Amino acid sequence: MSESNTSATSTEASEANTGKAVLPHHSWLQRLYTGTGGFEVVGRRKFYYLLTGAIVALSLLSIVVRGFTLGIEFEGGTRIQFPTPEGVTTEQVETVYSDTLGQDPVSVQTVGSGSSSSIEIRSEALDAGQVNELQNALYDEFQPKDSNGNTSKNAISVADVSETWGGQITKKALIALVVFLVIVSIYIGIRFERDMAIAAIVSLFFDMVVTAGVYSLIGFEVTPATVIGLLTILGFSLYDTVVVFDKVEENTRGILHLNRRTYAEQANLAVNQTLMRSINTTVISILPVIALMVVAVWLLGIGTLKDLALVQLVGIIVGAYSSIFTATPMLVSIKERWGPVAAHTKKVLAKRAANDTRGGSPQPETRVASAAASAPRPGAVPTGKRNKKRH
Image 1 (cartoon, rainbow, N blue to C red):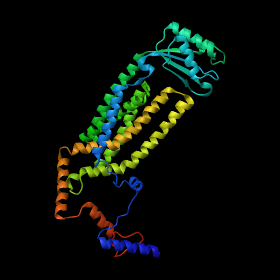
Image 2: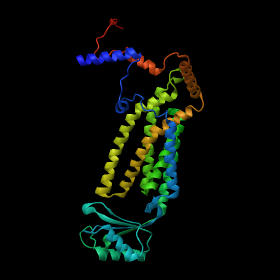
Image 3: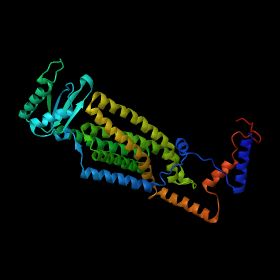
């Protein structure tokens, strides 16, 4: 108790000497959890614009220079698959393929695990003679077994894949994307306002470009499942953006009739208030996607699940970034460019500058400090009379 009294006395003495209240210091984790507006996102939007621009430029450069690693569905070709014989590796299969046809396959990989494991060869389009020659060579070398456990040449399956199928999937996906963006623009424009719709669409285009850039830069294979998965991540990003915009709308309602805070400051508070929620949503969304990748790649070896999970993993991370650091700062920039919000911001800033010059009314921070100074300390005995009147 004596140490507490001494600490309280020293604090009071310090406040008396400086004339200011000593506000409690909160760690960044506490500020993140409580959403008290301690992280300046909107105020530093120029920095985030530069960062976003650099990411987009790198993505576009990679797309132009490196291009994409297209799957067999887009380029066309032949897929050969057979049950994995015991002790056979993909390197051995690749060697047999090269020795037989005089060229390297596009890819050789093991699909599945355990007794359901099989080896899949992807190559350029092969004619009937090449297919027959390759089947004979693989059968003679590895003696694959069919579903009955008997060695058979028929255990080696061959399928020709046309590039037109991948093109049709892409065309339909692009049509779906255009329809999706139109519906989203109309919904946000009606539910919120036009400026929010513009900022949301800009954020979605950022998601698409950066996700495509990551695929190009790292060299992930682009398949129809990738194109389909891209549409799903746009839905996630839009959901996160709408949640933030809903809080922005709540915080800025009636802001034009007040002169204490600007639209940008209230929008930044909204970002902070939803920041922890955005992080939690992203982490919770990533965990099942990672689990899907583990199951698809290591246990089942299903390529479609792997491609779908991979694009979702990349897209969720990119979408979380854009909903926090792109959508709301873009909205504030549009608002402050013209219209009543721009005039209101100039009015508030001019009033603050005049108060600073005249030494007039204290700034919000000073008022907060005064309130903290007058507030009772935890454990203090209440003073004054209670109002016992019942309503």
